Image (cartoon, rainbow, N blue to C red; front, side, top):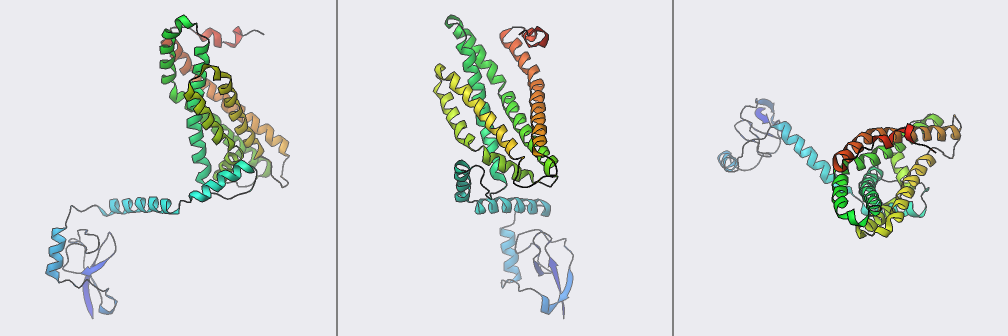
Length: 307
């Protein structure tokens, strides 16, 4: 025996042909074509009468959402819910503790552990980078002129906040790219970029503690901490670069010597640092000239540097 049914294009539910709105999701199915199906394959329908069912649908009816939009929203919500549900803070903390105790230990972690940790470190470090340089600049200003130049210096570094982060981001990206290319050169294998970032961050994860210490020192606003701030900044940067170089070497024979891979790594890192310098140089010079009304181009000319 054949019966006529409608199939909701949004949720796929089947219902009787005289139903105007989907009983599952409320989608408008008045224009949905009717299909004949065998009565033995017809799904169990709701026990409400047709009039009562339509009455409830009319009472609860809202402007229908396009099927594509509703489906996209449901998928996004499902992914976020799944991510929150599967978040394992104990495993993340274990990953941090292991990286602090034995940085070179082999351990498995979610692919986002490294990139999220690295981005947070970069944000904090770039802020501390600006604060440290600003303190160094203010420390060399005569006390009588400090009030005037302090406002100028604060305005200058505030306008360069994005450039500070750009310097740190490009340099960090250079370390990752250099490590990937050098590893590919030595072993000629397929390496997951997420696993590489996890490995670099794991090796240098002591920086997670150091950047927090650095930020606390910057908050104290003590002029006597300038040397400590600059020293910590240099150590953090060198530790991250060393971690990138360490990933080039593995406990297995490669197609090429690791030493040449390290050379390639250093060349690429140096190239990224040079690129960062030329990108940010113009912006810094422009801000100095507009803020302090000082022409500093002659001091940046290599021909004017004498040893």
